[in-house]
Image (cartoon, rainbow, N blue to C red; front, side, top):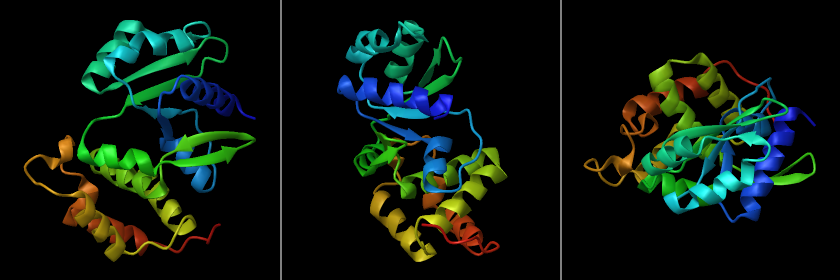
Length: 208
């Protein structure tokens, strides 16, 4: 088992034991659903309130570097903070779950999976695709779009029509935009056009 998976196992078990809901996302989740690629990134979405600050710090302070004030501010602002394992020097980014309509709907769709003998929660593939298309808008990253292509090829055959159905399911008001910093690019005409382009990109091998 790699150092990253060992750290993720530790983090997941401690969060679960404390009753703190979480899900791994980003590269870790992509590696589960598609062909694994080298990554040192561990991104974990956590459902936290300010009252959880001391409890969270107590879970990790013995063997991780954790800045209590940085954690408190991130929890208050629904932002991000990190912890670093003292022995392995592996960083875990905690993404505090936002209380927007979409993010609240996303969390119950997380998957419980088994990785090398331990169970953990990861982002559902459809939500991973949505997030990666949204990140691609700002970063213009080909890596994000490659991840989307791999997810689409190996997880399920998803059509632009199905994707448009997600859009109609989740977008309920242009006024509040579900609390997201922008209207999710994945739910715009541009997002659907990008998905269509990805779907019609060079064929990828079929997976499980």
